Image 1 (cartoon, rainbow, N blue to C red):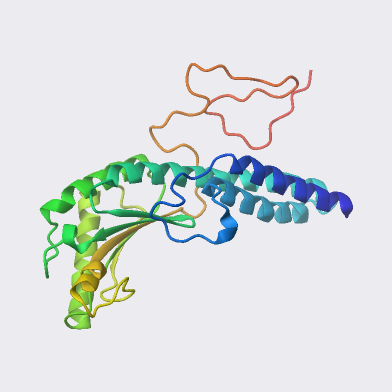
Image 2: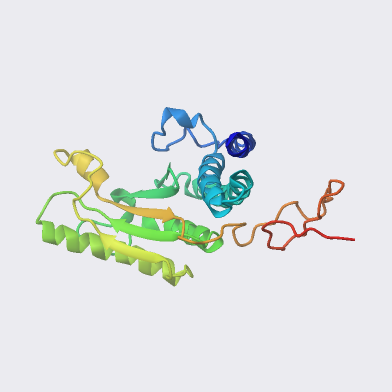
Length: 271
């Protein structure tokens, strides 16, 4: 029992400490408030640590004859999977912030989700679902990002203020969300994991009692999330690590890893 607990603690500590070496530079820039316990660590570290805990428990159950060994193996594998998505989302968030700078589009990170908020003053004219001229550049930037980072669930949600009937607003918000979806797919974004829906006046972000508040509520949101069961590695078009031309270091007695190889547990070679 003591060995099992010790191995779980060691696996968790290694994942969290190694993850903390890389902090998300956007933790204090336009993101939703995170719990104080996050301590500014990167999402890679947070998701990797959580994966270790879950994997350790699963591994201990799988290897019922040696709970300690099973916990260590399960924790290591789950930690790698969690860190893989955390790294993927970190890189996508970074590039989205760069491409959406000065466009009026807000990029927020909320846990494992990236949210883009597109305000009504750049998206659509009043009572129209035709894309405004000011909206094309942000949508083109988004399309390019979604083609590079093409392993997301993409949910497009249209919103309105509370002026007018609910049915009118629900219909209008649906048409606007669909207009965005149609434009993205016309630019080469896959529609396989893309959805569009209208939420009308629901979930307001400001008061509908004044003009400024209603303007904030008229918006389109694009939510990017992980695809369930998807294995996350490098986004399409990015160089694998280590960079090309850099030497690969091999510790004595350890198996050598090659680029492009799928790894789980290394296969031990015998003389």
